[in-house]
Length: 344
Image (cartoon, rainbow, N blue to C red; front, side, top):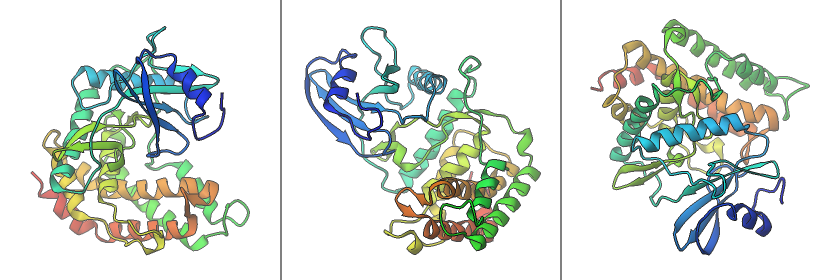
């Protein structure tokens, strides 16, 4: 069986599918969306349509996968818009282990990708709040979930410093951008702490709530996808990351050409949807601005400081764009806070 390929071999696919009772397989085709290191195959049989996924090598242990599945099964039991996990035929286990790899099989859900409408964005916020509410009392004591945020993190700071190092950086040292990202990150961390971060309750959060991880139908969320990043953290961090992801403006091939601003309308629409289900105090709403600054910096510097790239984008151009966006959020905090404060 293939051990490191980002594609399924015929032998691997046959062996994996042989552990499930799917009936007669009619056709298979690869799905290129999402993490390239997690190959996916759409499987059509006489019993339905499924998605087989191999989780990235070295990323997961069984506890993390078991935690992710427990959360999804809990949500499915509550009637939430999540894909069903298919269990193996012989052991009725949602986790299939073969040759040091972990596989998952899901029922395939039809839907369309996010088109950016107000109704879609509001419902995405509303569904996040429903998710937070449904998992708030879920007992995870035996599942060993990950506890991690990008807030006030020494790990993030060490990667920012690496960018400016003459010896450790994977690309030509970027002292200018490193210093400015560090300054923005430090100021944001201080503000979030002042708003009372340490007193905010932790619970299960999705960890990767962005437009690419959901499908829509009739302007509403049809399915929330990809629970690989579920963890324990204050839910406001999940909300801040989602508002950032939904309001990012990019689209042009080279990140150096991306504008510095965010789409404030989408940011407000998402929060409006969230607040239809869960109320937030003034400090939490104000802290979202600085949590977005911490998040956008952290998610960019970690891969660039390690590899010199963000996905297939050159690290230097990408970080300059991230600095423009983080700086824009910082300089426009007044208008952002005012727009968010009037949401009912």
